[in-house]
Amino acid sequence: MPKAVHILEHWKDKMFDPPKDTETCWGCGFAGNTRAHIQAVSHGGDESLDNLALLCASCHEMQEVICSSEEGVQAFKEAIKDGAPFMKVSYVRLEAMNDVFPFHKYIK
Ligand SMILES: [Zn+2]
Image (cartoon, rainbow, N blue to C red; front, side, top):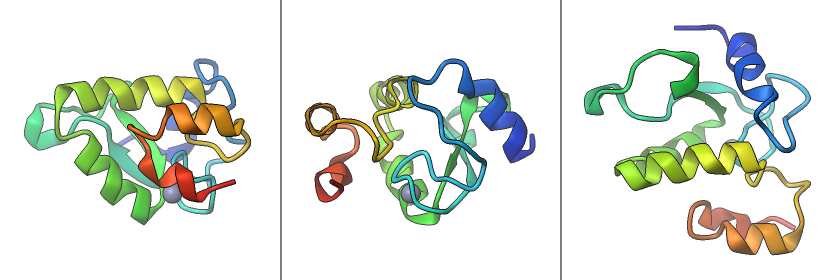
């Protein structure tokens, strides 16, 4: 399994608003950096950098639910690139992402 720093390096240039360090959850912006398989290994996902994200334990649980379908996997990858998971994005963007990250409605 690649290190957190390599996962962030891989995604950074593709992100609209990348986190500043590897200790920041890509889902909620708070502390947490478990290495999450975007597509679960049990569904054919591998340990390539393109299939890994850094999430806190809570977001990791939610991400597993989101990514239980192929559509969810694609939506999650697009959300990472949009930077939508982060608290810095505008409320309008958060509203637009509610289907993918419903917990955003609790973050202002
Ligand atoms: Zn989180």
